[in-house]
Image (tube, rainbow over the protein chains, first blue to last red):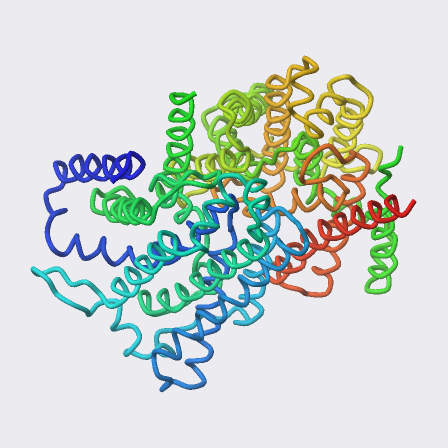
Length: 316
Length: 312
């Protein structure tokens, strides 16, 4: 565990300690389970965002992709309620991949800054979500129980259930870890983010690496749309995934990822996701209402970039 | 002047012709002036965002700054402060929140989109933590500025015109304006030529904040209530206006005239969609698409210029 992961781990211990002293209920299996209920969604999207941020980019449209895919899959399920689950998940992945590829195409071929493109598609995809759903919500009656049960059942270890969704999310984290650590593509992602010019001079096709990360990020956000339907049992075209980009960027940032690219790790981001899940649960357990959530995410992002700036100053 | 904002001007003419076929009201000056009060905040913030984008930065926190200042001003009025002191306080608060962004960007050398992404969440987060789902009512004496006319022109629009004049002169006719362009073109070259790069950046972000403060007063006065979820997503409109107006997102290029023309264009598109009963949520797709198309068009134009220059 490097220094970057250490910061996230330190925050996690500190936060649990303070919160645990104030509210001992925190260490009961139920609280741990509710923390683990938050994890899968954040983790899956954060892995995609990690890849994007490592290349020195950013994707603000993930929340809208999540919403669009949730509605899309909900409508598919409404028409065919007995669709096998693997196909449902693949459908979400495919919808996300299509939207992510759109981002990628505009960013790479249009040579436009990812920030502007994804601010645009953040709005555009949300608008499309409303058009697709005609403003109606996907209700729990349209989502089969076989899907919702995945969020609550799984493998039970010492009274704590690791849900199937969590296991799926951790599998994706493992694949991301392997891809980043042991493949040429992974090396190229880091190379592009550390020094784009040097990467190009070494013959790395920056366009195809960039295209791939935005497409993958979209696909994972699409998958998260299915997981959202599974966890909440409904999908609202307005609220599903709304402002989720802040949560995810906060998780990636506090996990020690350098937000300007080139440095970061899957383990750190996993800790970051765990930290943010804990914050979500602790806030409600400590009786601090949901009104403080956005402020908390903002502070987490700011603390993360300030820590990074301080570290850079220390080195210089 | 080689960067004349031709694209927004042409689009505006085409848009007006199309819109007037949709409804003859688009040629009615009173109707247009009435509508303009709804876009005064967007316009003010876009004028300052033009500086921010030309300097090679971006301010994602404008909507949140506006909301926080609007909520705080409403609270101050509810606490019995007089209107003149609240007006001053709102301008100061907005400027201050903007200057914080500028300080973090300039002094700590942090990328502006990250800083303002953080403060975007923080400023609106503070408003939400402070008010929760409640709304603060504003006193009668403070509301209704948008109904007030001066020579048949709504006061918010006059404020916008005045701000256009002032910011336009600063950007295009002063040394400070040249510094903003210079920093956006090459920050390193500006530093080496001894320009006060940090101070310029802080002032640019503070100006953006000042416009949010004035916008907060306008929105408070128009709506009569302050809530934490006002003006959600307004940063999209503001950035779209500036980019459609011909400002280069990479910095160094843009104009006040372009921004004003693009504001009228976005106003026209939004109003036309309203007349055609397109839901507000659906409109997001059009505005988001417009933003991307505008940047694409700018890039293609550049590519074309470079090709024809190479051929010569």
